[in-house]
Length: 191
Image (tube, rainbow, N blue to C red):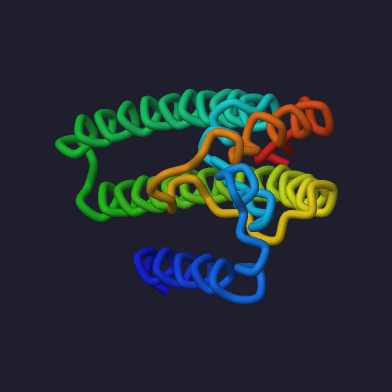
């Protein structure tokens, strides 16, 4: 569904709930309407940006990425030197010997490229697994908050036009996540 379709559907549900049997209660203030609707809004981007677990995760991934980049640069320097050496040998080697050394160099180059791709994939895999762990804890917390506060609907803040501040449960959920998961060990992508 498109975001506008979702917003329209939510507006329809809200209007229907206000004009149905609940309309007989006729809430008198906006606070009564909020209580009647039992809904909240959460800003997951703020949580991803500010939670301790996500910050820790980003720092660890950056450290691994930096180590991988350093290893790649070393390999590139070795390959560059081998390529220059091969270029110098071209004039002194027999064509078939040069062709064999060139083939060996190209095999080494392909092996290094494959290794680089595999290390990047491994890093992406462990990063995704770590994010999935944090998301699981976050979803459990959101579910508990919904039950605790009898919330029937929680919307993402980026999918809303206007939000009353008292509907935003982001700071509360962020605090609970920081308490439940202050840090997270990201697996070493090299293992």
